[in-house]
Length: 241
Ligand code: ADP
Ligand code: MG
Image (cartoon, rainbow, N blue to C red; front, side, top):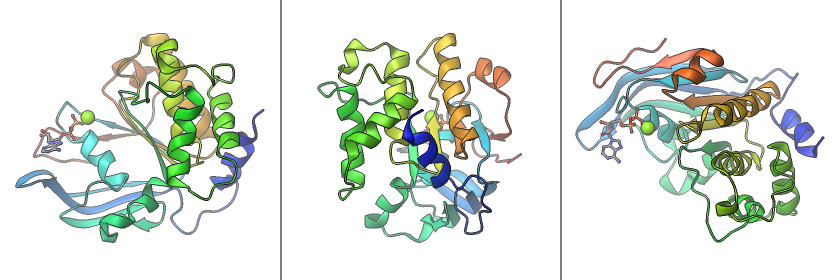
């Protein structure tokens, strides 16, 4: 069993009471939009440490916007956004790296660099986020083993299937052992069995204590892997459940 299992579990605080907001996400009275177009108005929602939740809603309802807020790339116009105990709403733009070091992100399009091997695709962002990390290759190798790609570390992305590329993207997201995993329609580009594999992996990470917040409108995933949902209505109506 790769080291990452143990490291992730201890990092995620499994078995220990969480008292400082670690692993938690909270939006309080958040209003956000692009220019004059509001996507959320006075929107509030809480996700507890270690929870698995879906963000669901039709295209354009704000799923990606919500995840972008949580990864610190978008500022709310008003309200509070707490991620892993950090007040994202009051960070300066140059401080957003703090958030990216604490969350892991998986996207629908895997966004792997085609000229780098699977291992290099995981090592590079790890080194950029944590310049002083001593053994990035060890962390990256552990993460790739955890997602079942221990024998593919030296492959270029175009030699991997879609599902394997998405697994590299998951390894990249978890190599720095985030307490919170954000995923934006991660099964949007893969077939049913591959979706199942990705969901099993997320469930495993969640079982180790990571909070998982996943945007999806994949009905197969929602029925096969039920979990609480944050339901977004078409703009401008907003209801959290
Ligand atoms: P979803 O992920 O649910 O499809 P999005 O968060 O991408 O929804 O989009 C929510 C709304 O915000 C849409 O009306 C979309 O057109 C708008 N939007 C998203 N990104 C931008 C952007 N970068 N600039 C302007 N408007 C945007
Ligand atoms: Mg989206």
